[in-house]
Image (tube, rainbow, N blue to C red; front, side, top):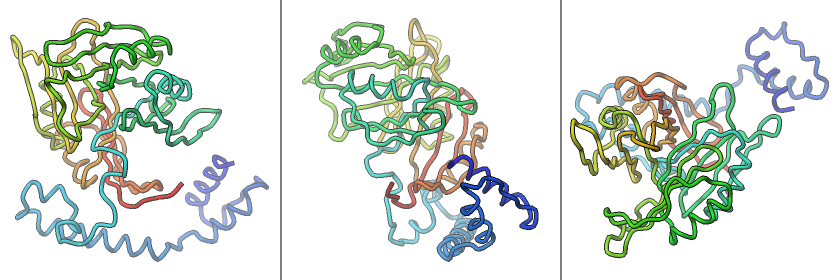
Length: 340
């Protein structure tokens, strides 16, 4: 019914009122209301539009004198106005992996068995598919959805810190994962193992040694990339997303052995592809203070437009790009809390 109503609304918006005819008896009363409301913006919409136009005017007039960090913050925040909400949605970090899968509900069950994941949100789609879902694992959020023609499957590689590597590894295998490497003490201060789940995602399960504890509030879940040339991806993240290099270790001929890139309160780990760890372009949900500025910055750094900035019903202003290496970035600024 929702899909039929959406089609009716598209018809209403695209045609003159005299040309509108809705034959669907179940939704025709709703369509009639929508037709009556056409061209009658709500007062809060007009107020928000006025505020946005004023904000853009202030930003344009002050851009020459603003510092780089100032330009990434909306004018309302720079002018000291009280923000109604944090630009990062409650419970999230700056970066959240977004998994596009074949079989999202099955992935949910896998994550519950393998990692004690807690489902927190699910939006059903057509034909029993999942339009959008969220779960929490080790205190961190993962977003995921079923694939479609616009967004084909795109599994990711994730570094997950747990309390017991061996037990988690065993649960993952029992839940249907395939082993890549068994639990081993690593020279860089972790005990770790790696598996591939039935949906193509790779999980690096780890626990730091007591002699090398993680800093307070360190993320328990980190997105990993294995591109052909990590140095190029790092350059894009720095120039296109405003990230900074926290750690980097290069090998012979400029090969990146390991790099840790900070963006806000999150990290991305990178290393050049090798052996079983081959390129896996990924989808990342990235909270930033100003979606519009982030979108323009990424385009200037070589990304291709995916979705222009717009306010979403779920409370974010969001935009999407595809970087030159196939990764999808959905920039977002949380602008209001919405109860579902």
